[in-house]
Image: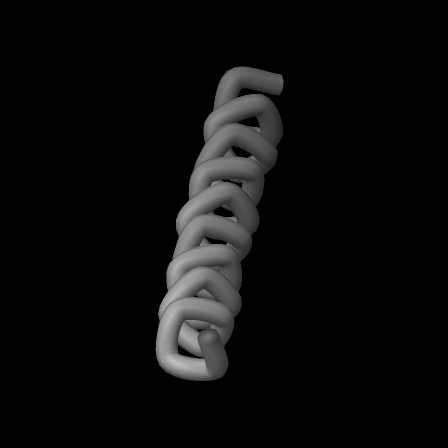
Length: 34
């Protein structure tokens, strides 16, 4: 059970970092576009 929770937490952290990366790219694209 603890391993499953840790795996879920790791996946959540990976999704958050990926979302932050995509958001940074979107902001950079908007800045260069403007």
